[in-house]
Image (cartoon, rainbow, N blue to C red):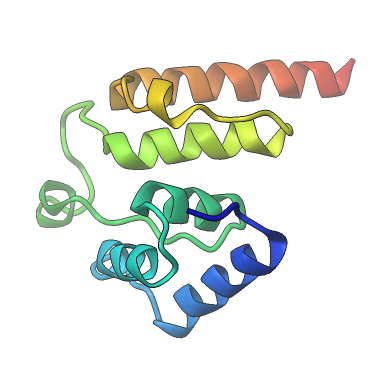
Length: 124
């Protein structure tokens, strides 16, 4: 697979927006783009998230209950993509092999900790 160039990222974001993503079809679009651009769905989702274009999928249970799940279950793929985007935004390499081993809750936790540290550092 080729590297993510700025042009490739722009092309993926443009194709995603052209597909008119909704919370219901976002994952189908990501999978299709991954196939079209010969990338992984997680890679495509990470680029879209980092560019602020990704629309989160609504969990079936959350949609049925009006958005309240009553639990603390999180979407692992989305949590890992968000953590990878935070790491990448700081110019660091997000190791997909390591990140894929995290639970969704762990990915959310580390993402919030990193963001908090970065926020604290920015205010000093």
